[in-house]
Image (cartoon, rainbow, N blue to C red):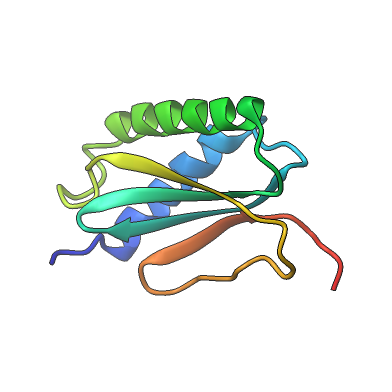
Length: 113
């Protein structure tokens, strides 16, 4: 399986963060981006289920996809691929931490403990 280069990751992370500006509510606990099965997966952990926040995630996804289109000449063919969202509802403490070679934490709410 081909993986995005470090340069790809940098471009894609910045585009995703740009798409998140103004969309993160107090209900968002964590947002991570991973590359799995030749696709980008935006994993969002919400404290409680919210129609408004689900709509925000959908808008982030749409804007992120648009931004990827704008940089397709700057990233590899591997990195220029589909984006999907995975929303999880959890108020477990602490919030799961999953950063690794194919996953980056883009946002994490400050929580006690």
